[in-house]
Image 1 (tube, one colour):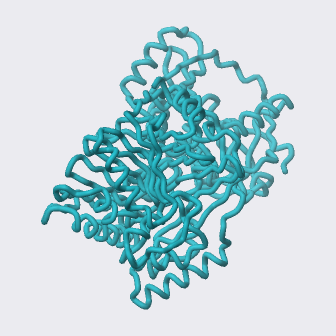
Image 2: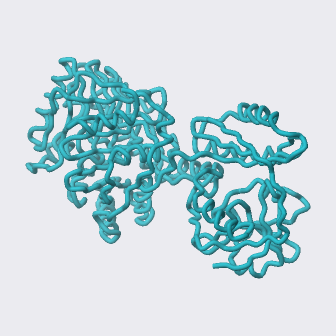
Length: 605
């Protein structure tokens, strides 16, 4: 199969299809597989039929076919007598297509960069905060009574129907690059999964799992990222939760593995994703001989990271407490091969679209222990849904440099350091030697006797585009500025990095220039001064100079850094408001092209 776009087009033309994509590569995750035109479909809505259907799937694999599909969370009820029910479910407990073989899909990075920007607009969760708070209180009572140590409590988030599911998938896969993405089409349903979590990987008789428990938001830059990684790694709550799930999964593996073969290969590893940090561990084991698929799934399904501990009692409480069935959420999506290989994810960050009823939902949740804070747990759930509402796909990093006469690049070290930090933060490819080499080659095109504006555009794949233009003389002596009516969100990570995601700045700056202004200044949601569209802001008051701290939501400009490090320039960070601008003895704007320039504020909002 040629690429992602043609794969999604093929799925759209099918009644039943499965697409399993690796969008985050490592030694275990290299392939993207597309399953089309099943020779049969095996599905189940009644628990009493589940084990028989699993035997049917295994029988087809033994004949030399592939199976690709999913198990819903509620399928786990029917592996345990204490949980089984006579209820018939509207959403399949099990759905597998049986295929002759999969098609391998080539990854096309340029295609990813051109992906549409489609978002999900939240309609409403299926519970409110009052209900959430009351249910967490009940969970803690069960913990107090010794019924459980932890419960993974979940609820559903509803969204407005987006229209084109393929465009939504292409957009969101860039917003959260993971190793276990999936698209499944069946009946009138489309499942879009963006799971970072491996449930299990089986290769003949070796099985491994990567339990994921412990979440924290990304920092706004490399420095804050390191602080958050350290905070998550040292979190007593998150470590204890993670270890609890590791012990649970070791126990699950122990029932179906050779004695002494269950090993914990790694504990408390922190993985970085676009919107959050995750703590994972690794458990591996050697399976017993002649193990059936029913025995395997009966021992491990559903994954302990999405239930709680002890597992059976936790599932009983979840069944009584949660408002509605989870369905595919916290179930598992994957495939099995005739060569005894299997890979299944934990179906978190998984969206279900009903194309007939035009409904969209996604489950979200977190692990609750006795000392869990209700508000922070609720916020963690909302954080996990962030990737559905915004995307960072397709942007490039920018550096704008001053080339002085004799082809000398001003403040080059500052520029390269800032670029390097942003490249690391966004996981861009980085090679400083290549950047410097290309800069030197480009400088050969320039005239020694002139000054230039040099612009670097750096893409995710490591492609560097360098362009230049003559630096025009600044003829304006009386520079005027105005405060924009637009308010910036200090939590927007893109304010802290110089990227092409700057449409508000670009649009407002164009208006300002058209009106004869030198710059336009911005305030954040707290009405604190941040920066100009192309400049940092500095005011003078008595013998000191003040500039807003980065935490207000602004770029750490190269010339700002230079002045902060200059011994004979008394510049300090201070939160500033509009009144500080109005009362300032002098107001300055600065950037690496024009240096420090005094301006006059003529009006403000």
